Image (cartoon, rainbow, N blue to C red; front, side):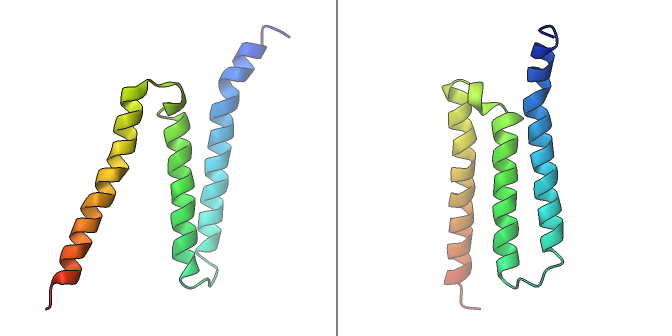
Length: 96
């Protein structure tokens, strides 16, 4: 049985991640049919954030990476928020 243990460990984390992503997808699909009003958007954005976190941690493998890929991975959302913030402030400042 000890020969199969490394193979089991190799497939355990990707399989658990895949199952978690499928469960989150099912919850997202199910919430589309519930009358939650504005809560539906918040719930689906939360589910999407959890899915992205799972993909980043296990597909991109930031857990075992060096400092530079982590810096780049966390700088991307920072700049995205900054660009959306500047675009939104421009949109709010116009009077037409």
